[in-house]
Every structure is written in C-alpha cells, then in structure tokens.
Length: 420
Image (cartoon, rainbow, N blue to C red; front, side, top):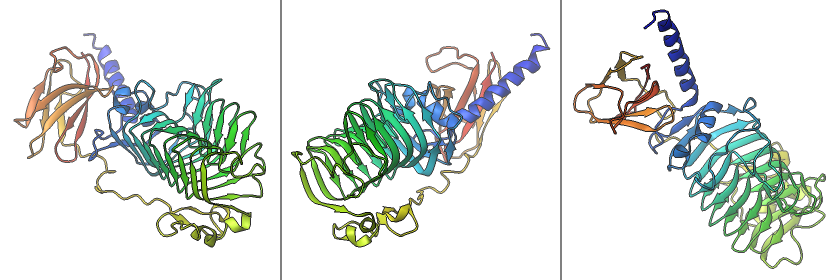
C-alpha cells in the first residue's frame, strides 16, 4: 500500500466515525435500553430506517432538538402505509422545534402510525404544508389503533384533504389524551381540525385547541373537523380566535358523541357544531372568555383538576392547561452515557480484530452495520475472541463503521472501523 495513502485513510475513517457518532443513537431499541434521541441527526437516522421504525422499537428523547437546519424538502416522515411506525416514542418532556416540511402527500413528523404510541412530546413552531390533495398533521398524519398522550403542538399547517394541528386523521380505536394544539390551521378542501382533521372509531379526551382556523370550502372546527360514528370527544375545550373563518368550535360534522365539553361563544360564530348533526351531545357548555377562565365552569362537568388540569390567570391566558409532565425513569442510568467495557484491537482494522469484553455475566455480542442491520452474533464463552469481518451467513463485510453491542449490564457499545 502507498504509505502516503495511510494517513488519508485513517483521517477518512475518523471522519466517518464522527458522522456515525452524530447519527446513530445510543441504545438498542428494547424497553430496558431504548434508542436515545438527542439531536436532529438521530431523528433523520430514524426516518431513514424502515427496519427500525417498524420493528416495535422503543425510543426516548434526551434533550430539546432544534430542527431549523433540517431540509424543508426531502424529509421522510417516520412511518409509511407500507411500513407504519409501531414502536413507542417517549419525548420525555422535551421539544422538537422549528421543523419545516413543505412537500409530500403525507406530512408530519410521523407519517403513518399503526399499533404505536407517542407520548410526552412537544412540537414547537412547526411550518407544515402538503402537496395538492395531501394530508398534514402537526405530529402524526395518520393514526390507527394507536395512542398519543401528553403531546403539544404550536405553529402553522396547511393541507387540502385531511389537516389537523396534532393529527390529520385518527381511526381504528385510537386514543388521544391530554394533548393540545395552538396551531394556525388552514384546510383548502375537505376536513380541517385545530386538533384533528378527521376522527373515526376513536376517543379524544382531556384535550384543547386555541388558535386560528380557516377552511375555504370544507369542514372546519376547533377539536375535530369531521367526527364520524363511534368517535368520542370528552372533557375538552376549544377557543378559536376572532381571525377564524367559517369554523365551528368543536366539530363541523358530528356523527359521534360529545360529552362534558366547553367552547367560547364569543368568536365561534358558527356555533359548537351544526344543528343538523346526527350524533349526540351531552353537557356541552358555551361560555364567555371570562367564564372559560374560571375553574368552577369545568368542575360542574367533573373535570380532574388534581391529576390532569391546572388553571390560573398567569399561564395559558387564564384558560385551563395540562399539569406539566415530570420525567420519571425506572432506571436513573437510562440517560447516562453507556459504559465502554468493550475493546477492539486493532481499530481500525483490515482483516481481523480481537474483541475483548470485561464482564462476569453471560453475554451475547452482536455486531451491526451503519444501517442498524445485524451482521454477526457471538455467544460469549471467553473474554476475548476474533472477528474476521464476516457475517453470520459467511459473507465478507464491506469497509465501513460497525457497532459491537453487549447484552449484559447496561448494554455496552463499541464502534469499530473496517478498512479492507
């Protein structure tokens, strides 16, 4: 080998390793050791790996993330019709801010979620718009048989078909609870909701909307644009601003049920919902602004001001808001860097590297490539062994970054570079 190429190859390997450090999160996606999402590169990695998002994996966000430098065109929402997101994403009380998406038929941080769960996450200052006849949701575009809890969105969003400040469309026994939207929502054709554009066979509870609504030709409302049969809205309120156009307060089509809900009569000139609605409405109260700022208004409807809601004249313009989420971890070490008890020599290597692990516990060593695909598995019988750069199938692996993970203890991880 040309000696002058060696420093260049080492530099290249270091640069590739630095990129991997920024991109692939710590953790292995299990409940005990979830992937730790700490920056936008981790989000981008997740959105680019179908085998990760559709594998019932667990994720926990470990810091606020500013997405202002993310590309406005080209971001792939997490979850698709072919491979929905079916994992658990815990925002852990943190925020993703300044995300702009200006392209796509299915727009949202999450595209299609089926049998998944998203909780404790805030999306702040979003700017989303879809293609013609597209669908946009501030957090999720399409939610099916899934749960969203304690999530909040602010910003602005536009779509032609289903458009919602939090979710474009929720169906198939989904639940949305303790969520809020302060999103300016503009729908150009079909269903537009401050919180949810379209809802069927699902439950919306303890939620609120506060913002501007505008739909030139379709059905537009503060909580749910279209509320189909078996959809339920309970213990929720809407305050639509005086900038809103052709908007109902709660739903523009009620074929489901609305119970124990409050709306502000001062700005919602269309009313809570159309008088011709065929659904049921029980204990739906119209209030002035000042009445919406009084706790007794909601106590008459048996709202929970112990564990769910708070109200004062300082926060949220005097309207009820959700008790802030306080992170509670079963394992206090969860957010700490993983202990490095695995060594590999030489590293970088060409044909063979000796891997050593310091542990007294039975362990399985797994080696993954940069795409997160499992390459090789070792059942540890000794504290050191050799990896010759081949896969479990006996194929020779290519040059690049690989990750060695141990199943013992705190799931240690080691990065290695194969030069070939």
